Length: 220
Image 1 (tube, rainbow, N blue to C red):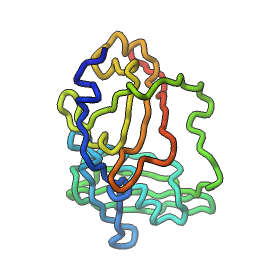
Image 2 (cartoon, helix red, strand yellow):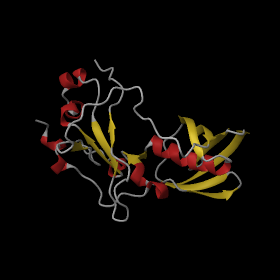
Image 3 (cartoon, one colour):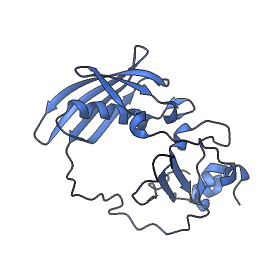
Image 4 (cartoon, rainbow, N blue to C red):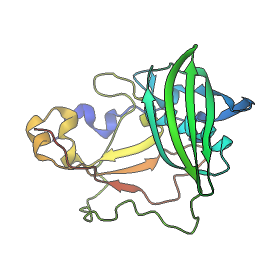
């Protein structure tokens, strides 16, 4: 049996998840220069999640590109900003027929926090995603007993970004979360379900839940 502190009855979540579109919104204040407001809803221990910040930079990058979709992105995280106002600077390095490259920089309190390079293209709307192509089909388990990852972990660390998603882990794979080192060493993958968290103004994501199995663990 899992430790009671990880049971669904002890999960702490906010009542109203924020819309990601609003949390990552950017506004152009001069050519190639944007303002944004880093949301506290995308934080872990009070600091913004790196993926959330990169997505915000990508919005600015697509705004200055003739193409619509981010195909690839890399980033250097120089300083961790606090929630609040920030500035994004963009530089179009190259514009091609099928893709363009854009450099972006996030500045907070006068300090450069993130330097990112994105490749922007345009995806074919008729194409279908193939998230699991080449991987073995995951074992189907019952979601009923899956445990939702809380917005505040058992040690009291606030993980506000977990209030924005409904992420549930199969109990058989939760050893890493409760200190079962012997089990964690034997588990080579983690099974779970991921949804966007429900809000009062928007229903659950219309696409099916994501069933995931990350790459095998290298833990000893």
